[in-house]
Image (cartoon, rainbow, N blue to C red; front, top):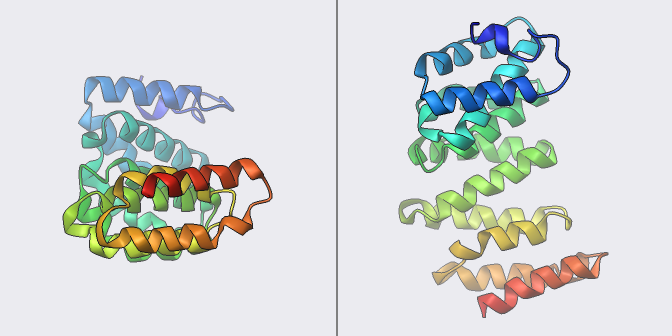
Length: 207
């Protein structure tokens, strides 16, 4: 069976299981030809096929990011898509390859920021994850940490505890005081005490 014939839409399936199984197999076999075929079909005339190809690609990225890292440019181009599924799928794919191709991820940051401001929660979650990973790389930290702080200032209070917890390893040095100030300023935003306590715990660890 060809790669395209094994997509969920090609098999008449309404769940993601075939796409996940295909991604696992391609990742295990380091099948670059299959990846190239999926990339080629990201602009397929069928929306379902496009969505399936993107799903398989970012599932591959979660398992073997090196297999899709060379295609960062294609993912970045899809951030302009009017199809929300392709847009956040591209952001998800880029998130999986930050450490494999940090240069491409960093170059895409202005576009990523614009998309995250208008996009879904999934889009913002992936943008914040990308900023955290880039902030762990000394060459980019001074430029990405202020952007990460902006996200923590403006994000929905529901997301803030997770962002703060995930960012803890990179909230050091000259930028730490700024993040402390930001997190303190948002302690009154929480309806649920459990979420406020999670942020307080992060503050305690930051000293």
